[in-house]
Every structure is written in structure tokens, then in C-alpha cells.
Length: 263
Image 1 (cartoon, rainbow, N blue to C red):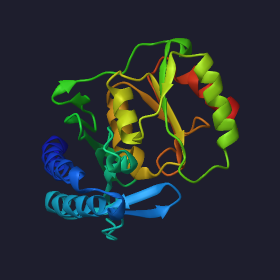
Image 2 (cartoon, helix red, strand yellow):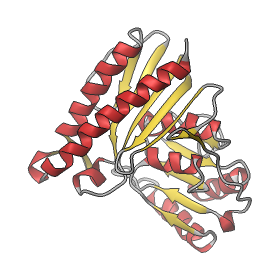
Image 3 (cartoon, rainbow, N blue to C red):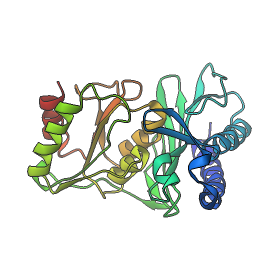
Image 4 (tube, rainbow, N blue to C red):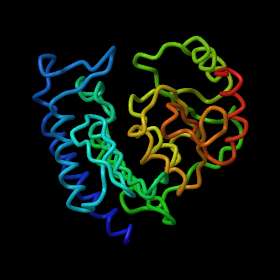
């Protein structure tokens, strides 16, 4: 399997679908927004984009199945499955606010082997595949070399409906506000991970996530020299609904802080 060639095809598909999304932003209003749950929104743009991605990815790799946010395909592959978020940052999108992104990952058995994140508003495409470098619009990217949490710029996200851990989470925010360069909340986990990969953030953590939020970002970050884990330091970050993602220098100290507050 030529992963580089497949990645090129996925990039082209993500940009084509991203152009559709960008064209639709002027047509979105509150009457075209549906609610899947508390603060969890979906539009016809999400659904149509996913259908476009499913069709295009099926042409690229017919034997692969899908794990997709809007469930437009129920097909599961024996070896390969695409994990896709057709519009990560829907709340941003419906308010005309950046960032919002397409996230596409290819999983072989239980391993992510390819990832593409297309941040639509800035026309930035982040990508990597197994054993490759990590790239942003054709240029190699790297995580930062920051070696202290005190000097780190940290990204996070807020839960939409799972507030069981909100108090310890807010306590962690207070600590990090006082003991870092600051905290940013962009509203797109895929973009957060891409920004750690390219050195705009030093660390990212969030809970109540889904595999399509993080799958592509994980491989891009790893190939850029970063590290990922769940809150306990294990590998259950894809389906475990929580993730820590940092450069390699602050991983241990940052993980200790998250563990202290959230367990």
C-alpha cells in the first residue's frame, strides 16, 4: 500500500469538500441547525460533507469501512477503517467563527497509519502517514522545544454535556492559568492537535472527546515529534474520551499536573 499516494488523494478530497463547506457558510442560520444533544449541533453541511467524504474515500480504498461522526455509513472494514469528522468545530462554523476543520484518519486494525486535517478558514492542510515526516501545506513541521510547563502555551476544550469532571477540570485550568504562558480554547480539537504538531501550542488536553476528534491529529503530532496519552499515561486516547498531547520535553511534567487534578 502506497500511503503517500493515498495521502495525496485524501488531501485533494479534503480540500474539495472544504471548498463546499466554505461556500455554505453564508447560508447557515438558526433554522438550519439541529441539536444532537446539549450544546451539540449539526447542520446539513456536516451531513452533506460526510457523504462527500465517504464517497470519495470509498473510491480511494474500496475495502475500508468507516467510523464517522454523522453515521452516514455503517460499513465496517475487516482491516482498514476511515475515522472522519466532516466538520470539527460546527459551533464555530454556525457562528461564522474560525477555526473549523475536516479530520480524516486511516486505521489499520487498531493502529492509525495516516492522518489529514484541513483547517478550512486559513486553507491550512496538516498531514502525515506511517513512517513519514509531518507537513503543513508541503512544509515539514515540528513540535516546540519548550521544556517547562511554566513557559508553555496550552490548549484545551470544554465538554458539551459531560460535566461529571467539571470541578476538577476547572481546578486544573486555574492552576495552569497561574503556572503557564496561558490557555487557549479554539473549539476544534483536531485543530488544537495540529497546532501542537506545528509548534503553535506546547500542550493540549481535553476530556469527553470522540475518536473522530483526535485520530488524525494523533499521527500528525507523533510524526512531528510529539507525544500522546490518556490522562493516566496509557494508550486509551482514541476511544477513551480523553487525551494529553504535548511536545516530548514537557510530556512528563504536564501529564503529572493533569493526573493530579483529574484523578
